[in-house]
Amino acid sequence: MRAMVTACVPNSTAEANARIRAFMVAHAGRALWPGEQTEYEQLLAI
Image (cartoon, rainbow, N blue to C red; front, side, top):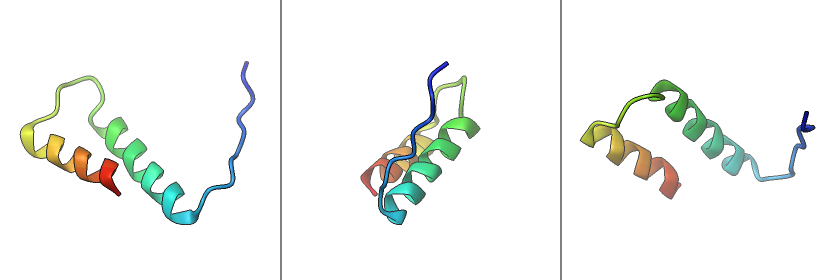
């Protein structure tokens, strides 16, 4: 099993990553609707 390593990243980066992860979990297993795709792209641009 791989050990989890916590990297030192700015809080804003950690928050952005958490939002992206939450979005991905909420939309797992299906294609995104056009509005969801736009939201996802906006999250990636943060």
